[in-house]
Image 1 (cartoon, one colour):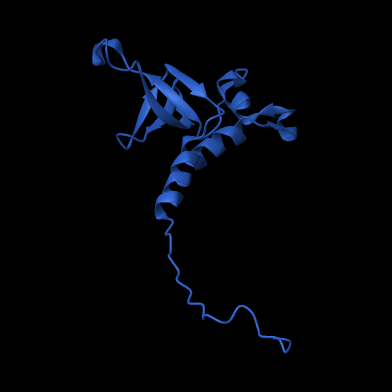
Image 2 (cartoon, one colour; image 1 turned 30 degrees about the vertical axis):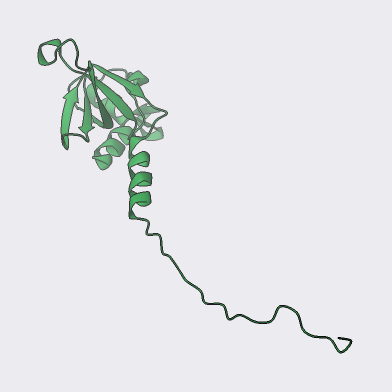
Length: 133
């Protein structure tokens, strides 16, 4: 998915060969709207339709933004709870939060093995007798 995201962004970069227009703009002959660009891997909250939830259930599903959907005004999201991709246009983004970093950090903590090491130290006399004693 990240490769598709990068390709999408590269097609939005202006090019000197295209008179400082981007490839997407030349292909579609439409001006580009950059307002929908989001940070890859950020937290995204997809709205759960009212007919699929009760009043006491959450209104949104916490996901991870993975890409844009071409030809549609929607976003591809990863639902880590159900381990599946979803497509939604009703999304709120938190571009300052990266949930995959939290997962990696918690996995690293879980996989960290604490080793107990015992070192035997021989007992020696703490003080030497001096010749004056």
